[in-house]
Length: 264
Image 1 (cartoon, rainbow, N blue to C red):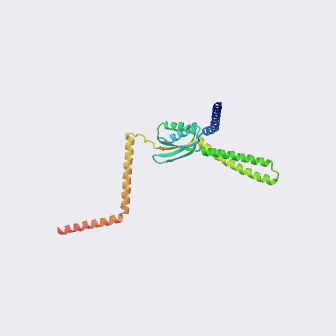
Image 2: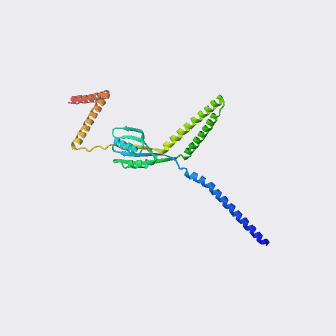
Image 3: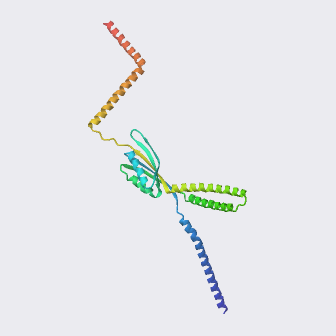
């Protein structure tokens, strides 16, 4: 009989321990679940910058097509500049493109006629932590402002009203500054600056026989003119030296001629 009670007691204790362990594991899973869901629900936020380099035959046409492609995708031009020399024109176009449309924009640029894309680079910067920090700061500042406004409603003296109003103004300034940083960050997340470097060297049209002959004749005249100018500069600039050489040579020949004459 005693053994029966002993085994019953052991069985009850085993069931009790098992039930407690199950409850503990269930409560742990329930506590961990929301934290995991919260961490997974935070979407990564990144700032992207892209750079493209290309060569083209017609700079103005290529620039216009790039601007049109970016505008059609909801973007806008943030910078334009170019330099022109005798044979080439170089410049760049910076388009602010919606982040989701950057790949479409680059593909459209690559598909342009008479355009060769030489390089494409994309850089990413993770700003998730900064965005979360700004949101938390805004929430804390707004809660602080609400508390100050509640104190202001219960203020009894003019001095209290003045001090609390000053504190509210200070907090409001911090809210506006933080909100501005948040808006700027969000704009940089939403829009990607794509810098397109353009190098254009127009091809020379084919010339006929008469055009090539005229061109060569002009080059020949130009060469003769440059030679005559050089000869004039050389003669005038070195006239004293040339005169001295002439007198020496002329005197030597004259003496030689006199000697020959006497021998005869």
